[in-house]
Length: 67
Image (tube, rainbow, N blue to C red; front, top):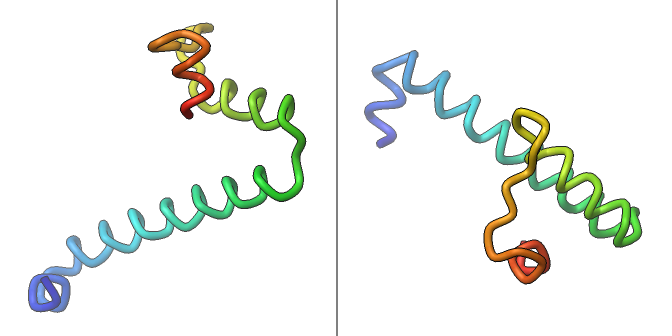
């Protein structure tokens, strides 16, 4: 993997973008867990997953709780 990253700039760029997105996501989750109350965390979760005005909730409330 290191050789591929060293020899292919496009692979290195893609890897950096993916890692940066992961760090942003983890930072957002940490902020949610430490700063926001439960209703605010649920609202944030719903907003992040909305598509076409809907949020798919698989397994209903239990699925939402598992998330």
